[in-house]
Image (cartoon, rainbow, N blue to C red):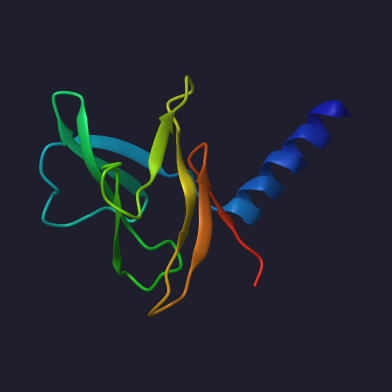
Length: 112
């Protein structure tokens, strides 16, 4: 019975938080970004920004600055399971006005 409970929980978690977001280290962004990939742009251990397609479906490209001497800036954490978290939340003030956290490769939407 526990296997059924775990399976239901995993399915419910996937429905609530959506598909897992992969990440990729790149020196230059590709011409076409994948909807479910977070691109960490940098070179030789220096990271400049993160880019991804907005998870709401509006298809806008989001850029989050990783340089601490500029404001605002984000930090990212690579986890042992291969997932990434981004801090603080991403909040679009214009357009779709999405507000979410990226935690362990999953989108966690903020309440309105």
